[in-house]
Length: 272
Image (cartoon, rainbow, N blue to C red; front, side):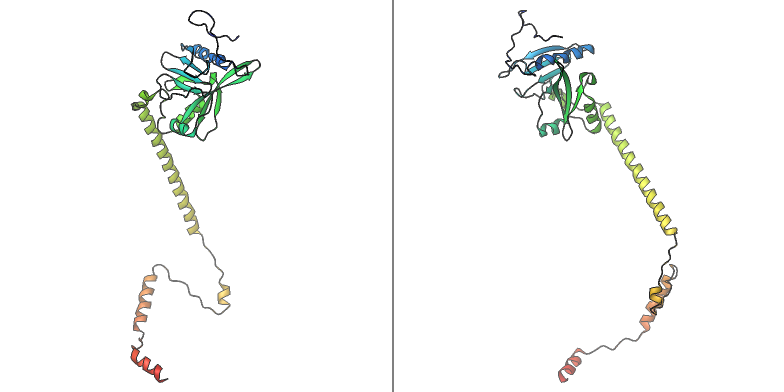
């Protein structure tokens, strides 16, 4: 499909303010294919070039849906408004680490050369993860907003909900009962899994110790007996109490040395 700008309100071709003539100079036009992708999914989507103060035409584009929409930023000319109702940011440039930590993930966009044309790819950038890129056909528009396979994986791996990409108004709402039930069910499943693992580990440990205690061990003490050392079998468990009492009684019957006068000892030392 040849590229051309939308007609202006007066019916005449829109005058593009972009002066670049590089490979990516027409990327803002190829982004329009995202709107066509949504319409193919029976989602009525309108595409609009917006020009905030200080930005060239094509730096920022809106893809409007009946409920919500996407705001595409191809460069850094305009900072994304994360909590603007109905404008989910899709960025052509990376974001800082703090933003990734706060929001779990952000949407990215890039255009790859395909012969003489350019193909739109949607990315998912998250903290401590490589940015993953997907074709438009691999993406979906859900009640949460734009979603990719990577987004679904990130959301499933978390136990709490991310900051809403749709805006502060929705972010302030408490999760519904079904969402809370799903979170509690995941936590219960994890706890049951850890309990099974603990029981399996305990059972294995008991089996190991039982096998070790049932084995008979032979100890070669010839190095002692050959040297004239007499060995005696230690008392069994039932005999130990009687042996201890007999030993203690014998020690008590042994004569004790008379107490020594310290002064006498000092006097003897002085005489000697």
